[in-house]
Length: 127
Image (tube, rainbow, N blue to C red; front, top):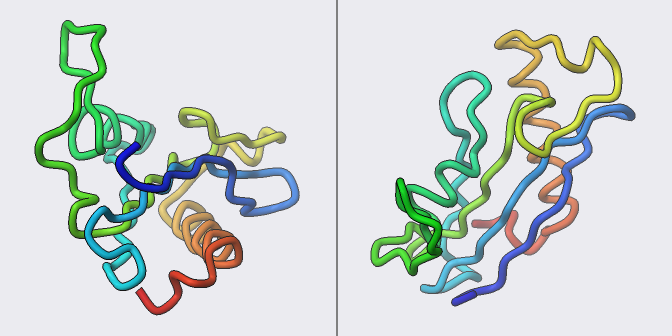
């Protein structure tokens, strides 16, 4: 990877966690902004944006080859890809209620995920 990258789960409740990939900027990771990416949907994995649109590498349609992206967004920003809502991609919800969503529940989960992210990466708070 051309810069540090991280993947894991951001806890949003005792039974729910959203999967993320965080790719640091190749410009200036200490001062470049943090951009949070959610693919549209609801229900579309943000890994689509990461692997087919603006991540450091891409897999083009009808291809099995991972290629370097000539125009990745992380040249000027720290990129945080969050798979939302719970149940999408690798994000998990352990109860039936965890998999029922509304705009309000998704926004609350996104806020909780961001709090969890900044607990894990407090040095990015000023970005």
